Image 1 (cartoon, helix red, strand yellow):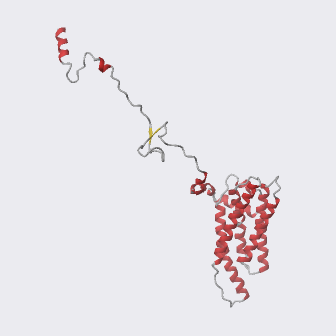
Image 2 (tube, one colour; image 1 turned 135 degrees about the horizontal axis):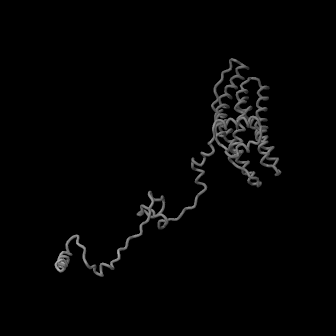
Image 3 (tube, one colour; image 1 turned 90 degrees about the vertical axis):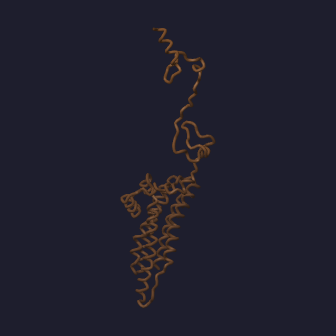
Length: 272
């Protein structure tokens, strides 16, 4: 019986599914090499590796790929770099406007230290440009109408160009010049804070422009000189906090007179 069973196993060992009784030495020593599995990322990294490689293995950089150093100038031309300077709400803007109208309220730089904005600079300057252009023409009309009601009057479009060039130029160039002066003299300064402070300092001229419609020359001069004094005091007091311990009082005085010069320019050119 056992002999018959062994014969059956030997005769059927070549059939499909059968298990051979003896494994040959050659098959037993066969080495199947399985490639090492690597985790891969998708999509491929931009700018890394050759064009024929679509995936990049984690832990081993693609052949020929080198990390490029960050370029600080890239942020200057990126809009997303400036979004942090417009992250203000209505309450913050109103609070800063009130501070600019009342210079003795406190140090403006300490209020904006955590979040200086450029929204006030752009919004105030743009509003002031249109206010000066429109109300300047209106004020000229009232003066001429009061002097001679029969005199013809035409709208002067050049007021828009002069207002845009003078206001934007002043609000950008003057803080920029002071920033480089402070850096040259070894005093720490922030360009964004300077732009923010000088931008809000112009808000008083928006209010005074409406009062300058009064067709009385003496009253007009009182109004513009008072507005210039408020704006100049706001700039001077805040700059003084930046030069504590340094002999830079001349820069504070120069900033004060620059603000007054702007006030006189507004009166002479737009409300003659």
